[in-house]
Amino acid sequence: MGRRMTVELEVLDPRHDPEPVYWRELLAASRRRAVWEYDQLGIAAWTARSPLLLFVLHDGSAPVGAVCATLLGPRRHRGSYAPPTGGPRVGVLQVALPGTNAERGWWFADDLAPRDRRTLLTTYAGLMRRRLGRTWRGLVWRQAGAADLPSLPGRVRLVHAVHPVARLPITWPNVEGWLGSLRPGRTGDLRRQLRQITADATVLPAMGPARELVTALEVALLRRENELKYDAAPLPVPYIEGLIRQEGTLAVTYRDLTGRLLGVGLVLDHPGWPLYLTWGALPVRRGGRRHLYFDGMTRVIGWAIGAGKAGVVLGKGKPELKSDLGAELLPTYAIAAAG
Image (tube, rainbow, N blue to C red; front, top):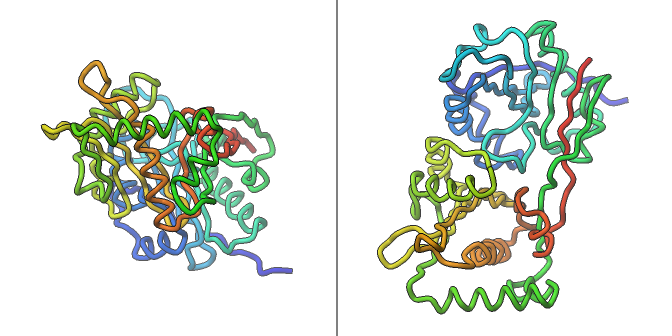
């Protein structure tokens, strides 16, 4: 039999508690993206409407995983919330990561066995019920994958399938290989659209560190166009600004000859699977250009191929379109658990 775990739970409020001394090393070892940087979680907590807490799971003295969760209870007024000790007394603990719905709100050290992962999450759920009180028995786990289902605790569970995550594995030596792997109609459309962008001398594309190419306000304004079109959740400007400052955030941008931003996508780098986080573009009726979305997708895929990535996570929007671009659709679930 294996060693029995000694589970300890560290509760952190990123607004007030200092960053743990081990946090950056733990993120690097666990291959986390920029959304898990402590200062980024702090911005998310300050701009959230409900208390957002970070829970670090320890096996003895060693940190081995983390959970990000929001205390969802009745809200009597808008604005900033009180500290957790003075917060709502009844509600549900929602485990979800702010900033993206393409990644779950918990993770472990890569070498943990499935049995140990379940032990950690079961202990976490029990400790939180005791800490918050009997009126907080419910947990909601969002963006769980099929492989996560056996690890999640709770005697009573409701499992609801939500939009899948699109993931594009890289199996080609160059962009032409990717284009050639698609169905003929899609390949022809993409090549024609890419030629049109290349031939348009009034469009200036670029890709590189986001902090060198774009401002948070520019990204927020173009994201707003997509939010209105697809009823997407907004990202606060301070949160976008924090992301742009992160070393692991890249941008693909398009500007016209006056410097006006026509389109922008943000990419969160990762050793194996970078996440194409967000896209926004100026509508054609207001001076934008057609086909920037597909050109941007192509540039991100080309960058990932050149950087030797295993693939690109394309997020949750437009699953049928992304499937047509060669992505696999991974089922995800929201799980309500009690007991």
